[in-house]
Length: 118
Image 1 (cartoon, rainbow, N blue to C red):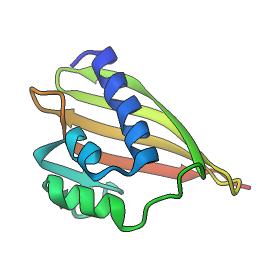
Image 2 (tube, helix red, strand yellow; image 1 turned 180 degrees about the vertical axis):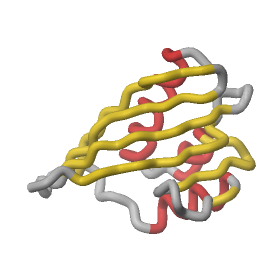
Image 3 (cartoon, rainbow, N blue to C red; image 1 turned 120 degrees about the horizontal axis):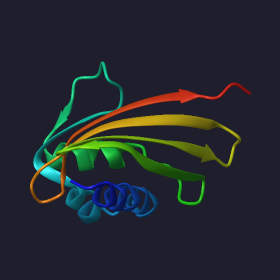
């Protein structure tokens, strides 16, 4: 993966988060992908489980803004950082550790996030 390819994936991730479209969510991830909301979580395994988990408690459209950027890209692995800002004033710093398959779909996603003090 190139930095540009990872950035396109990250931008698509944000777009899909806005739409909460199940098919579009699924397109981001490999069939056997693993997704962790926290590094210590058991992974959601497989595209169907990831889509179901994503849609279980979705953020309201328009209630947040986010921007993530590829920080390090090495082969099929990447680390991205960014920020998520909610309309209620909550702000989070985010780090994603990612691995991609040969088709550019994410096969491993692990998130770290930290809420900013108020």
